[in-house]
Image (cartoon, rainbow, N blue to C red; front, top):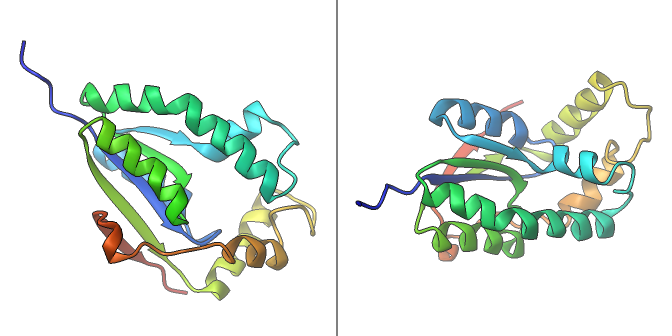
Length: 169
């Protein structure tokens, strides 16, 4: 029996509220891929427990460890996967590399480029649309600044297939 063509792994990088989730949904529809959304999994599995960056890292790591074999299986069977998980640091991007290399799959790293001002404006709009009270965790400029302090855009020496998406105000 002939080996089937591997699927493609598509993943996103960008500051908080830059538009990564919106782009992920568009990509999944465009390439007819399975879409996995980290925020949805965190809310479903750990409701109310993500109160700071430390718990976010703890629980998101658990989800990554649990999903890695399944994502690899999908890719190996020719199913493309869009991961709406942050690829915002070199360490985070190592996991994505592991996934596509283990499955011998192609990949695309979609880098959403947006100014801090635009991201903060979109964060405020998103929070209002969701009916979140002012000051709710993960909705403030201070939260944005805390998370963005760790942001590390992809560098050429990382050798990813980067596709840039410039967001304008």
